[in-house]
Image 1 (cartoon, rainbow, N blue to C red):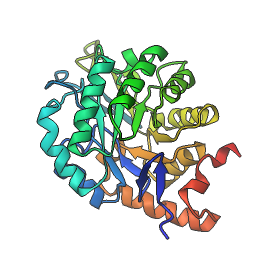
Image 2 (cartoon, helix red, strand yellow):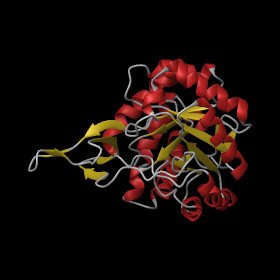
Image 3 (cartoon, helix red, strand yellow):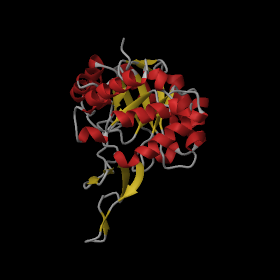
Image 4 (cartoon, rainbow, N blue to C red):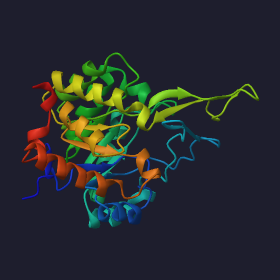
Length: 300
């Protein structure tokens, strides 16, 4: 019996760990490699309608307990990503991350991702450093409801919305996703952040502001999942600062049916294998026969 098997609505995973959007997901081969290293699925980098260069360097900096980045959603455009998607989809479960400036654009991108072999789509409604996209759309309940509803009407695969922690309306936005028929919520994206170089009295990043990721954000992410679990009925995917099995267990017990790992891959490419083995040991010791039995345990 595979105790790590889990379901995110209609999507079944043999392992609960997913490669988060933005790392080890630029090519089909890199995503296929992650399946072999213990990931249950992989989310692509966020893809838009047209090729986008992103922000100029410096766009990334390591700080104690994490990273701050302002990549600016660089990507080859949906047509340029077809080959990578098809390669990855042959090797495992791929979730296509997409961003757009309207419900219509999101829907068109989702249709293409489904055609390329995506098992689900993740709507990037939470990027904090790309003007006109992400957080600027994902903090308005009416806009979120419209986008999710439009995408749901356009594809047959599950639709997940990735939400931002940079709002006091997180649960209200989550309810908008649920009301629109969304199949699940991914939380959280990065926290809006800034780093200044005192020697030159200037922001380090060319965009001035960026997104904080890594261990520093984990307690915020766990709290977000806990709050969403208390308010919603649809499945949740936890992300933010997961580096080991204990971090993953916190998210699961807060209410997540699966979890994503991003920044930790920059330190250890074998992190999924270590998380999987650690979770299995913990589950055996404490009598959890499945991931489902652990989901939301902290609410009980």
